[in-house]
Amino acid sequence: MQNTARQACVYALLEWEKGKVFSDEILHNTIASSRLTPLDRGFLMETFFGILRNLTSLDFLIDCLRQGSLDHPTRAVLRLGIYQIFHLRTAPHAAVNETVSLAGRARGLVNAILRRALREKESLEQRLAKAPQTIRSSHPTFLLDRWNKAFGEAPTEELCRWNNSPAEVHVRANGLKISAGELLHTTPAAEPCPAHPRALKVSQLPFTWMMNGLCYVQDPSTLFACDLLNPQPGETVLDACAAPGGKTTYIAELMQNKGRLIACDLYDSRVARLRENCTRMGVQNATILQHDCMQADGPLASERFDRILVDAPCSNTGVIRRRVDVRWRLTDEDFLRMPAQQLALLRRLIPLLKPGGSLVYSTCSLEHEENEDVVSAALHSIPGIHLAESRRILPFVDHIDGAFAARFIRES
Image 1: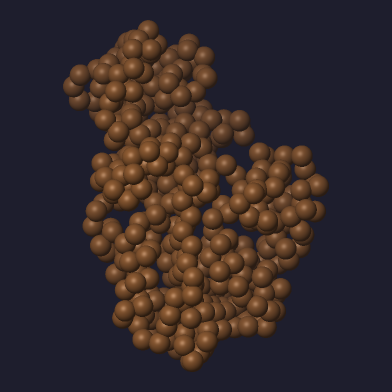
Image 2: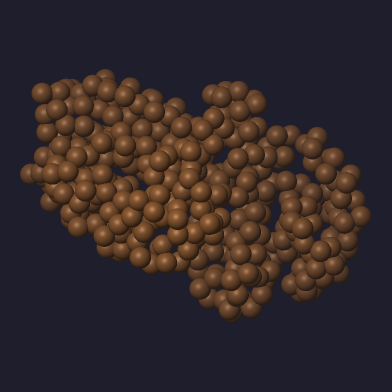
């Protein structure tokens, strides 16, 4: 049982170091097993995600203050202390004393390092400012190399700053129950989002909005693939990789709950979450299936669809701001493996389109290999289709999460 926010943060960091579970699940499990107040839960979220965002720069500062190896628990405690000193407005005595109390037999060492960090803060910040980009930005070198090549140095610096900033909370007003304008009038904590007419930015999310299915928490970038799909009432539509349901519930809204919407996902736990969200949002025209869309047989074998959405599994490089540990999980090999899987999905699903039907391929990746190159490979290897339009969203241009979507049409 973790009884304080700092204690819970160190526990979560050590769980993350094991490399078996993603950070958002670790945070969820840590909060569920603790007795933290809402204020303490906010502090835990800020410190845990903030440390993962700034991991390399924090370790650089620690190494400036202490030569030699450190065991995992001591380094986790030091990361927490250094993060508070350099990134939060925590009172210095609290940043040191409360953190030192977690260090066990290393209390003397941690106390000395943190007090020295306070004394030398200005000079340490100057040293960090002169460090290589991979340290300053806390991004792996291979990601920086590919982004510098694709976008240029200044946009890459801006992208890293975006990734290292806390994500704003956006919601989509659920048009099956309420309009964005009506939702705005229920709280002063919301304002329109210029990126999309159905999106709102909220500083404090009202619990009743979620409980009553009046909104869905999602970045505006996730809506454009559905807009490109443009599903119509009365049509037969497939959402092939549907969980947790943000795009599924928006498609149902665009269809006005009329027609047939089949939503699939592979894993039981994800399908349960998809079903729960569809129920909460008032979706009535969806059939939810646990199904691997790569399989040639099964419930989709005899179906033909007017429109198909393929929101493909991807590297998530467009949403690193939200999925903070993605940067530390990716390797160069992922950008060879994922495009092959993505193209295989298109080859499997395009034959399920009716003549004249549309398929939208989307990712939350910034990478050419997963976006334009997959589109090009599909056009060259799948007969009877053409590209109607595509859209790429970049955080340093559009000021929302990164995304890509392309609409294919199956020729008559």
